Image (cartoon, rainbow, N blue to C red; front, side, top):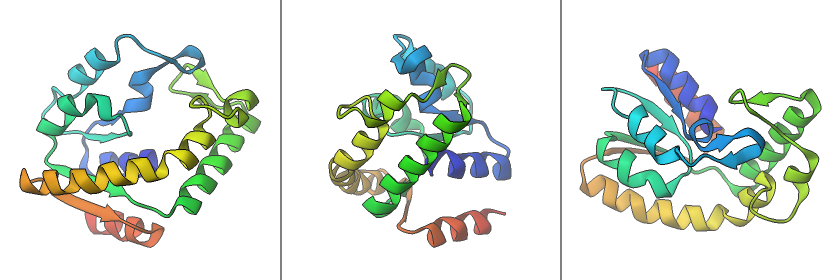
Length: 161
């Protein structure tokens, strides 16, 4: 997904990877009150790659971004990937960002705390926002990549190498 692609770009280009989830979450997936300050500090370096869907910090990140990559994968792929990855993390008791672990209740409860619920129900909302944003980003002179399949993502990474 987003983090894997950003990690690959970071490794290939030798630039820092900023993971917005890591800046946003405290223990137990509690939102950090320092989130915006953390984002502001992170983008002070000359070059970086960032992943995440945090529109509320776009006023900080977008002015400095030169390229935008939108993983516009089909909903069934996005949701299935989230389910598999989340249950894998739960099963393996994976520590995320050094401070959070998946819980069964966070995966299955029907509200915004469930990453599965969020992926399914916010898919079209985010898609519409990004479709509108692409027009703005192109007008601002940003280079925009819209990758619609895993094959396109793989080809993109291969071209960077």
